[in-house]
Every structure is written in structure tokens, then in C-alpha cells.
Length: 594
Image 1 (cartoon, rainbow, N blue to C red):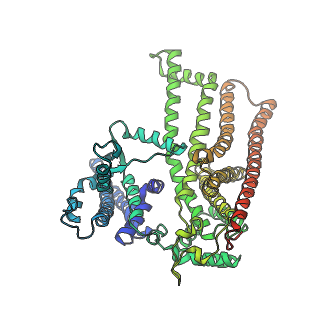
Image 2: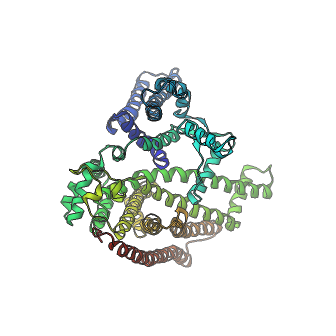
Image 3: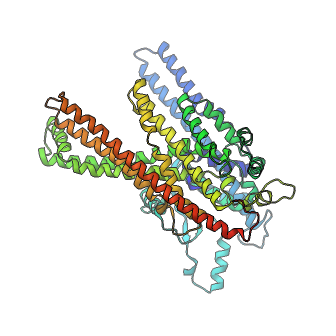
């Protein structure tokens, strides 16, 4: 819920909550695009055209103010409209909570339930408005520790039962101590959670995640098992996937016909993208489909690839910008302190600029520390966490417990009744393929950004960048290494392998890969700055530059080889352990598919 609430400002999760609680389908994404983006752009274009033909030198300022004011009003109206829609969902959730605890017609003898559901909603209307404000601070929930309440044990238990489910009362639970929770607690403290006992709200993201957690308690499993965006139930398409898996049908056409509506729409969108995107995606799909199709269905493969391409890229860009801004501020402070020591606080702008340039040349070691932080924290840690969240956000029946999946069958049973139980080897392979699919989508999006945004214009430069980045599949390799730990945690049920330990090898490899490139780039920039005053056209200098370009290629190629060898060794050992666990289960389960 927390991951999905962060992606796209909670829009996807909010739509799902509205569908589950209000049984309504929001407008299509095409209509939303026309209403929220197309209409404001059209209004601005019309105002600019009118400004061009009607404005004079005296009225030009008035037209500009009118244009910006119109844009501001339209944004405010759209944000208020979205807020009212989110508030309707929250009221529906609170009403359902009230009815579940006290009944539709509560007994008047119940002191808590003397009010009607409408009166209960009116009582909490202020909290509802604040929780879904566009940007504000929301007071933290009060955490009650019932063991400290005076009185007998029976009185404490009675008070705990009476307050269960009430707004603002959260039972205290022992937190899990892992890398992710520690980082989240740090960010939470920075967002005023400690200083002023408030949460920073943005488009109601925290409230959307909170409502989703309550909806999971209020509704049946069958009602919750729907895809995002299209809201198609798993029971409509997953039986076809099970039939293909049970029959061992390896024909691609049959797997494409078993796609869900969401995957079908995603494939259509991918087909309308740029030619480069289609080539990369097609190559990945062909490679993945050449593997075993029964560990992870084509439908799930498309969803995981789309999650990496869209959601992971958005999350990584936002958090990389935030973290890199902090490191950039620290490096600027270091430069300012060094320059002030050299020229003093009253130096001229020319002296300050020259001192800053000289400081960067003579203190490469200090900047190497910031390069290390950028490589291992900004790039490696943030991107590996984003890829993990991209995998963790996608809910697909392929990787769910078959006993939890409710299908429309003649017997009304679960997926276990329709299909033999999957082996642990197959489940582990499915997790690996899913995480690699997310990483491939993320790498595809990142490569397009590097080719068309960061690369200097020119077909030769763009092709060279694409080829150079394709030679080192660091994102899929790190995702495969991540999957070793995730399989040990989720499939082997090893409690020692939490998130931090699972992603550490991938962060180490990814950070080392980026650190080599960044550090050598820093040394090369420093060397060019130091020799800028002399002649650099000599053959020896050109040969030295060629060797400098070849060095990172050799080092990074070695790192990729080491990463592949590590994954092969760990993967082989993991498959051996899973086979032994399967053999132990075969004695008690004759329907196990190995």
C-alpha cells in the first residue's frame, strides 16, 4: 500500500480504492489526459494567439498576468476536483468500518454506536478534509499502549476491544528492523514526523495508503483480487493461464490470447511508442519467451516490464533528485569554505571563481568522497530499492499462494483445486524472471533518457550511446542477484534474509560499476583542467587519452563478469536447496509439479 501510494502520487491506488468501495469506474486515461492536460494547454494556446493579435505594448503585461492567472485557476480547480473524489472514497471506507463494527442499524444501548453512520462521518469530517488536502500537515495518530492503562487486566482488554478500529487509535506492534525500515524512519523524521508531530501530506498519498490497508480488512479476498487500471478480476483470465501451464502448451499464440485486459492494453501502448523502444522491448520479450513460460506467464511478464518502465523510473528520478541535491549542497559548502580560506570573504568575483577552480584541481580526494556517495547512494541504493519496489508493487496471481486465489469454477474452489501445486524451483524461477523483467523495463526507460536527452544531438552519438549502454546489462544482472535473497526470504522462508541483506550484493556491484565511471571522469576532468594552459595536441597525449577511455571499459567488463559468476554460483546452490525441499514435500504431496 505504501509503495503504490507513492507511485504517480497515489493515482493508481486511489482509482482501485474508488472501484472497490464505490463500485464506479473512473474516466478513461485518454479522457483524463484531455481534461487535465489537453484542455489547459488548449486554453493557454488560445490566450497566446489572442495576445499575439490583440495585445499592444501597453497591454502586453496585462495579457501575461491574465495568462498565468488563468493557468493557476485551472490547476486549483483540477486539484480541488481530485480532492473531493478522494474524500468520497474515504467517507465510504469510514462508513463501511462503522457498519462492520456496529451494524447497519446499531443498538441504541451501545454507547459508542448511538450515532448514525452519517453522524459518525460528520463528526470526522474535519479529519477527512485534512487527510486529503493537496498540501498540508496532518497530526500523527496517537499510539496507545494498553499495558500502561491503570486498572485490572479485564478492564484493559475491554477498553482495547472498544477502541479497536477507531480513527486515531493504532495498536502498537513490534517493528521490523531492516535497511528499508531504517531509511524510512530517517525520511519520516525529516518530514516533521518528530519535530511537530505531523505528517507532511501531498495529494493525500498517506491517506490513500491508509484507506487501502483498511479496505483489505473490510472486503473479501475475491473482491480484492483485481488488476489495477482495468479492474479485471483474476478469475476471468487466470484459469486460462493455469490451463496452459497444466497442459504444457508452449505455443506463443495461445499465451498471447491468455493475456489480461491490462496486459493487452500495455502491449498496445508499447506498440505505439518509438521504434527504439519497440526494438528493445521485442528483443527482451523474445529472450524471455524463449525461456520456460510456465514459471511466469506472459501476462505477468508484461505487467512487470511496464512497472519497471513507468513506475520505477518515476520513483527513482524523484528520490535521486532529492538525495543528490543534499550531496550537491554539501559539496558546495565544502567549496565555499575552501575558497573563503584562500581569498577571504571580501574577494572579487573573478578571484572567487579562480579560487574555486583551483580548489577543485588540488582537492580531488575530497571530491572523490562525494563521487563515492553519488555512486553508492544516489545511483546504486536508490535505483536498486526502486527496482525492488517495482517488483513488490505488482500483484499477479502467478506469484500468489494458490490457496488465496478465488476462481470462478464449478466447484467454487481455489486455484489449488484447478492446478497441481507448483514446485519451489518453479516459484523461485518465477521471482527471478519477474525481477529481471522489472529491471529490463527500468533499463529501457533509462537508456532512452540517456540517448535522447543527455546525449549531444546527432545520430552517430545516439547510436554510440545506445550500443555502449547495451554492452553492460548492469540493471538486469543486479536484479537477478537481488532475486537470490528475495527467493531465500519468500520461497525458502529464511527469516535472516530481509531487504537490506538481499539487495546488498546488488548495491555493491552497481555502486562499484558507477563509481569507476564517475571517478575516472573526475580524474580526466581534473587532468584536462590542469593541462589547459599547455599544448595538448601531441601524439603522446592522444595515446594517453585513448588508454584513459579503455581503462573503465576493462574494469567494468571485469565487474560484469564477476557479477555473472556470483549469480551463477549462488543460483546453482539455491536451485539445489529448492530441489531438496521439493523432494521432501513430494512424499506428502502427490500433485506437486517439479
